[in-house]
Length: 75
Ligand SMILES: [Ca+2]
Ligand SMILES: [Ca+2]
Image (tube, rainbow, N blue to C red; front, top):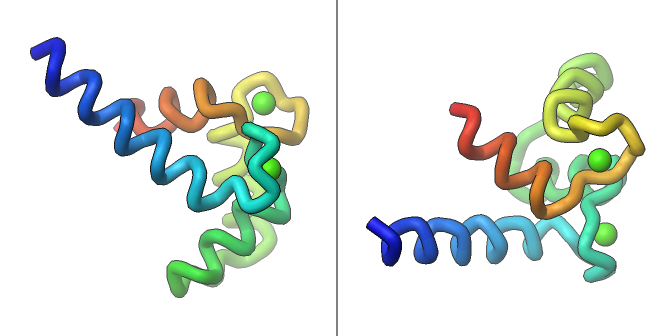
């Protein structure tokens, strides 16, 4: 169980880093949008705003690894 948890958090971190282009440890709106585009997703402005608001739990306009993890595990 402990190994599985470690494994999945490493994967989350790798996914996070794929979005964090400038490697500052936070995903900005621009980075998330670009990341979605690269994956072939083109959300509307409203869909994107909703998604970002869901991920950015403290509303500071940046997604931390912690927020990203919580978003992924909320499904
Ligand atoms: Ca960044
Ligand atoms: Ca935040």
